[in-house]
Each structure stands twice: as C-alpha cells, then as structure tokens.
Length: 613
Image (cartoon, rainbow, N blue to C red):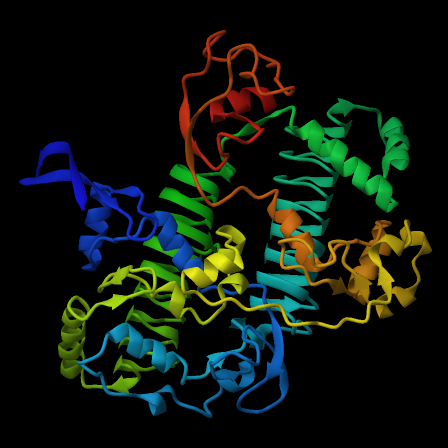
C-alpha cells in the first residue's frame, strides 16, 4: 500500500509527488522522491518494493569478500583458493581456466520455459555454468595469490577489495599503498599499521581518519600533521602528545618512554587514546571536496545522496564501496564502478559499463545487461551467466536481434504474472534484484553478515544458507597469552608456530581460532619494533570495523550548545572559540552515520571547523 504526498502542485502538467511505501521485507515505511521517479522513468524500470536498506542487504548477501576456502578447480583439478568450498553446488574454475577460451558459456544455453518463473531458471543455470574461484584481474598479480577483488598487486597477502598495492598484507579497501599491514580503507599510504580510513599518510600507526600526515601514532582526525602521538582534531601540527606541544627534543624523549614496544604498553596506550578521543567533537561526516552530498566516507563527488565509501560520483543515490575513477547516474549500486553509468540495483560492475540492471559481476565494456551473472564484454544479454563477448543472449542461448527483443519483452510480461515468492513471502516481479535465498554464498560468509549480522537461527528461519565452520583441527603450538611480550624476544621460529587466537573461536567475529605470523609481517613488526598480535587476522579485521561508522544515516541536530557541547556524560566539551550562533545552541541539522545513542560528540561542519582550524 502506498501513500502520496503532494510536494509541488504543478510542473510540466503533472503532479510532482513523494510516494510513501511499506517495504515488503522489513515492513517499514520508505519514501520514493520525485527525482527517484525520474531516474526510474529514464531507465524504464518500476519503482522498488523494498526499502533502500533492505535493497543494500540483499546485494551485500551476494558479495563474498573475505571467506576463502581451499578446494580443487573443477577443470584443471589443481588446488586453488576459492570463494566456494568443496560442498558448494556450483561449478568452480580457477582464474586461469575461467578466463581462458577453453569453454564457452553458450554451451550451457537453454530454452526459456514459459510455464516456470524466470528467476528460478536463471538460478538453475547459475549452478551449471562455471563460476570464477576469485574475483579480480588475477593476470595483473605478482606473488599475490591469497587475495580477492583485486588488481595490480605485488607481494601482497590476504588483502581484499584492493588495487595498485605493493608489499601489503591483511587489509580491505586498500588502494595505491605500499608496505602496510592490518589496515582498513587506505588510499595512497605507506608504512601504515593498524589504521582505518587514512589517506596520503606515511608511517601512520593505530590511527583513524587521518590525512596528509606522517610519523603519527594513536591519532584521530589529524590533517597535515607530523610527529604526533595520541592526538585528535589537529591541523598542521608537529611534536604534539595528546594535543600538547613539545620541543623536538622533549617529544623524542617522551615517545621513547611511551612507545608501544610491548603488548601490555600497546593495549594501555590504545585504551588511553580511545578515552582521550572521546572528549573531542567529531564532524558529522567523513568527507572532502564534495558538492551537494549526503552519506559518509564520500570524496570528490557531487549530487550524490545516501551513499557510503564513495569516490568520484555524480548524480547518484544509494551507492556504496565505489572505486575512484568516475561513476555517473547510478542508483542502488555496490562495489566497483570505474567509468560507468546508468547502473541500477546491481553489484560488482565496472570498467566502461552502462545500462546494467539487477545483475552481479558485469565487467569491461558491457552494455544493456539485465538479470545476469558473471559477464565480460557483452551487450544485450538477459538472464545469462558466464558469457564473454556475446550479444543478444537469453539464458545463454543466442538469438537474432529481433528475436532477442521480442522474447525479452515476453519474459518481462511473464515475470509480472508468474511471480517468484521467497520463503519470507516477498514477491519478486520485474524490477527487483535476485532474492538472498538464491545467493551463491552462505549468508554468514557474505558482506551482509558484516553489516547486517544475523544469528544462525535467524538465517535459517529466513530461508538463507548458513555454512558451519569446518572443524579445523589446528594443532596449536603456542597460545596467545604465551607469546613474547616484546618483539625483541621473538625469533624467526615464530613463523613456524601455530598461534591460538586470544578469542579462541568464542567471539562472533568469524574467528579463525588459530593463525600464523608470515615472514613479511614479522619483518615489518621487527623493523617498527611492534609486538606480535594476539588475535587472528579475521578478529583483527572486526576490531578495525569498530572504527568505521555503519553504512546508515540518522537525522540529528548539532550537539554544540553554545559555549560547550550539549551534555554528553563525563565528556562535555568546552569550545575554544566563539561560534556564529553565539551562546545559543547551534540550530543546524544533518544526516549522519553517528547513531543518536552513541557516545561521540557530533558537530555540524561549521562548528567542527571552528574548533579544529
């Protein structure tokens, strides 16, 4: 049921309205704005019946970034690293076999059955056509086998969603960086460790949201800074410890005392820094160089709304995880996007693609693609899987141009009559992305579990797939609590040990239970005099995620109360300068990814800049 709100009485002889709908999935109200209707009309698709958040969750469930398995290629039979385990019902080829000319997607072509729902037929086809073991341009990798969603890497290990990196390990969303380990969201960084959302930084350790800085430790929201320790909201400062200035000589002496060269000191300083950061206001959004934008972690974009982790976007809405390079006129899109346009309700699409709807992993000069999976360099395909450089195909069968468009129109009509209903009772007509229950990945191995976590019971109740962790039977040779306190006491023998994760598999963070220290990591830790970590790489990833805001917005008011911040527990902030609104509370409102119940003091841009510049 929908409700209309008239927002403009007359324009071009039509009413311009906001339509409020009830989401099929979560049963909450959501609005479709006039500009949304214009986009749907432009690409000739009906408006959605799921809210934006449920649409995002649905796409995320089709994206496996970090759950890797050992198995054999179904073609060449060699052992490989894959997104699919041996129990998966899908045919899986290694990257070399999948990208080769030794097989043809047209060999799996099938006739459209008018008696059956079309989405079910696409789902059946996906279980027959080979799936690539991993995603990315693996021909561009040098000594970087254990990676996914990557291109142009050299000597990298267990990094994902990453491009143009060298000597990096254990990280996600890493771009144009070098010699960095255990990070999340890096761009043009070098010698960075344990940090989140840092850009153009050098020798940056355990820091968050820093830009254009070097030689900084345990710092947050610092820009243009160097030689800073435990600092927050500084601009163009040097030789500061917890925001207090020191001479160069005194700074060096103090850092020698505080440097986290033992695990105990590291944990103590980490806790002190978090407590100190909480005393200062945060800007309502992480963003730079934008015009007319809402969302978070958005950079160099314009006219882009309700979007997250985005660079170089224009005229977009409800998009996330967008790679730098340019994207335009796109709605409801997740991951990738380089030089692409007119994409709707799809994921992992990019490199000169356009007019791609309701599809997954469509790359390199693809146009006019709908309801398709794993396509390369193809045009005018509908409901097809694994096609490379093909045109006018439906269910992997090729037709003449006239036959193709006639059958496509017939199928769209049928999709609106012969409906697909998932196990939750949601109805799928033409205009909705594939259901979660059709995903090629178990829910708990998908990106959805990171952002929309569900218990095993909830997943199974909804009819999704859950993959129980295999009994790894690791022969642990040393427990985390027994590791040397200082890196100075660690020998090269550590690379032969199997270390029990300190969480012991008892957390909710997809714990690996045990892990090794690889040679590359050991050399980095010794060089920087940092202690051996106690958590497995996956648990460390989840610790970093706590420093990245959720991909969701709340409407809030600036918490500047005049001379001080509005009461926020023990961390009320005293303003350092008079603001434009004087002693009265700031009237500004905004959309922010800081939930109202969180402890941070959140300022609008004007009040925040008065305090940090």
